[in-house]
Length: 236
Image 1 (spheres, one colour):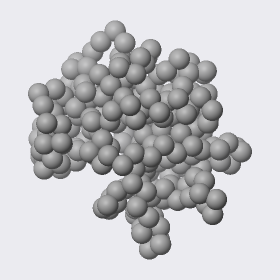
Image 2: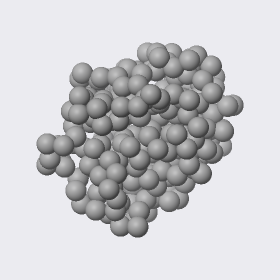
Image 3: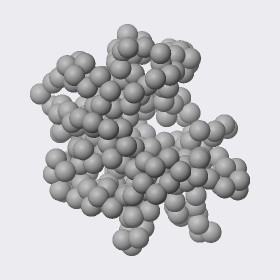
Image 4: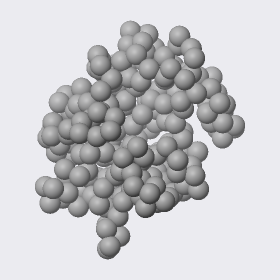
């Protein structure tokens, strides 16, 4: 059984708009609705959306029988956001975590992530010509996943890595919940980072799989109006 958690709590101050960021339309449909559409195409049986900024407005816009909303009262990071919904997922489910402001991920790529998650936790990575702003995926000498390092915490060598973390991951619900409870905010930003669950998975002796896409428009997020316009062009 597949359940999807969509993180949609961000403030989106760079959009310079009173409308919550995830409700800004891409080709006439709110970004978060496009992500919900994708979850439905993946045959997710339950869709959990974590809201925060503009919670009432977002909740009203996405209301549907298969959608449950959770409020992240304080924006303390993506790990903290996912933890608002994870306890409600059935323990044996596969949980896929998506983002309300990353609207163009394809079901083709995400199906690969979900299928791989039946064996181990999975991270969706991307190879980018310009990785600035993204956390880097660091591999060990055997080419296996070792860790994700956020840009603000990365060394010069790590910053040179072109393989980046998209933030999208999948794992068994009971394991994901356990790891989320162990995530700390001991980092430059003082936030609870969702990708830290992957390091905890390694600590538990689990192998972490990595699915890699080279389609940069698929994984592009929206932080300002210029980026939204770029995605409009990519969508067309």
